[in-house]
Length: 234
Ligand SMILES: C[S@@+](CC[C@H](N)C(=O)[O-])C[C@H]1O[C@@H](n2cnc3c(N)ncnc32)[C@H](O)[C@@H]1O
Image (tube, rainbow, N blue to C red; front, side, top):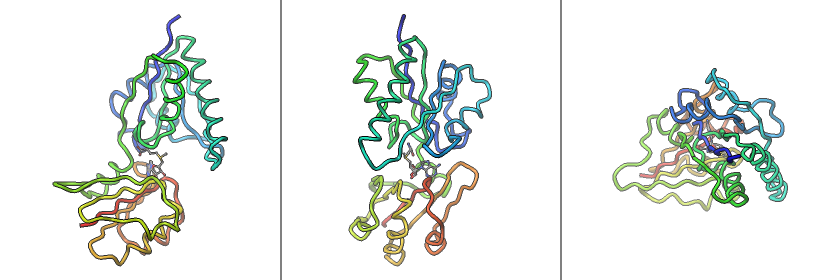
């Protein structure tokens, strides 16, 4: 029996209309769709997006991924989930892994892909790109991400203690993701700095979407995992 094809599918930031046509086609046609959920959440955003397609022929299998700070615990869960996926693939079933935003950008999918490719060299694989959270923030806030000679960089997480050390050179746009715990330390430092523009977004493309450039208002908000910032320095 031939091995099934493994598809990594970026589903965009969380609104069904931000799915690409290729993503929708793959999700509608595979035998099994793996979705991502946290250990304490009953439903997942990726599952909701898949359901919004209406007519899927495959089975949905939610996978729990640990957010533990212990790399061994995280790796064990990745290995276990990769084994569940390869069981299906080895039975000839086409499988999709649906992941928020783009599949190759700070995504759990990357770990699964590397594990499956190491265990099964030559595994038939396709990766479907998705709209990233930061492209969505730039679009919905109508903030130009970069133009002319400006440079773009992405910082995935930083500790509050290091907020003072982060540098924002002129002519750069910095995307700060997964910064919900350290957000306020950085805003407190930057809010009075000349030439700095801050755009903050939460739950982009979903119910409860929030966008602001008002530092006082952002500082008053509770932590939100699904949040990020653009910092532009003229
Ligand atoms: C594991 S990363 C996933 C990134 C994703 N693959 C992408 O392309 O944007 C999770 C982080 O992405 C950001 N994020 C993802 N989706 C988001 C959304 N709909 N609204 C706001 N932030 C989002 C947040 O910074 C969150 O902490």
